[in-house]
Image (cartoon, rainbow, N blue to C red):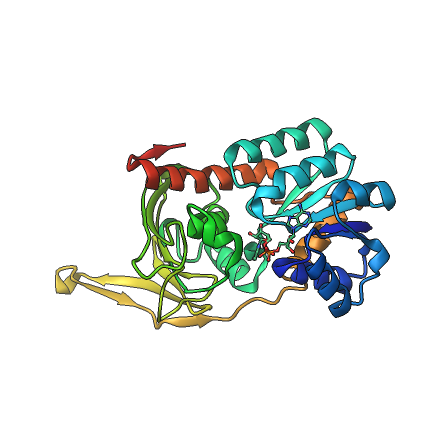
Length: 338
Ligand SMILES: NC(=O)c1ccc[n+]([C@@H]2O[C@H](COP(=O)([O-])OP(=O)(O)OC[C@H]3O[C@@H](n4cnc5c(N)ncnc54)[C@H](O)[C@@H]3O)[C@@H](O)[C@H]2O)c1
């Protein structure tokens, strides 16, 4: 499969490496609006300069491709996705699907009307940690899941578009954790209460900290707290998690998974003593492909042989409605019902 990659800046490098590693995918062309970045990356990745274009239409006119990979900042996602599908090409786009719900819905409409795949890169799903958590929850060994908690604290200094966004934490980062909640709970957010704020020492223009309480289908509860302005005790990018189940608890801390099960309740102690098994650490499952490698393979299979792709734009609109619902709850102070 031949692809045009649009955007070869920060995250674009990760995709360039995934494309260069893939035995199934070749670069048909590259689009980069910043000449200095194009030049530096051409040297770093031995790219053919004759295949680097300024705009996607220029690349579409000049080279033959089967698909597009979009790694531009969110405000360009609608333009790139719609231009790709209008040219008859499926597209794999970075999250968030768009930077407004209107644009995200417009992309979904074009995907539905054209019948073309628009896949969204929710790469946090395709990590051994995530897949192991999902497998334990689905196995039923801890009984039914009732509630989960996630906490995320880091202090990255990115510069660039994130420092200008109204809700950088929620739209650019928590979107991964919210999408994982959908995966773990197997349902969509229904009601949301949330607050966001910007610490006095923040280097972001918009709110870099937030807390939210979310009710999912079936009454499942999720509690989230996070910050991109944390100055110490950072969590992993995957966040720390706690899953409260009918017969035990699963805890995820610093990318390690621990489980403890309830064995019995000591009636002799008037029901005040719960007897548990020893806490055990659960080894992470091995994956043949992870992250971008997984997504690129899944996308390639879907484009070339029509197999399914999990995080299509049609599916991802539920993650977008969730994310924008949290931002609306923060801005309006009211409970948001989706
Ligand atoms: N999934 C993840 O783990 C993850 C991690 C980081 C970033 N991202 C996402 O990747 C996307 C890009 O983020 P980034 O950190 O690489 O941003 P960036 O600003 O570092 O890089 C974006 C690149 O796109 C180029 N560009 C911008 N508009 C363009 C256009 N119209 N045509 C061609 N090139 C254009 C810029 O010049 C730049 O080189 C964002 O949507 C971001 O949320 C995802």
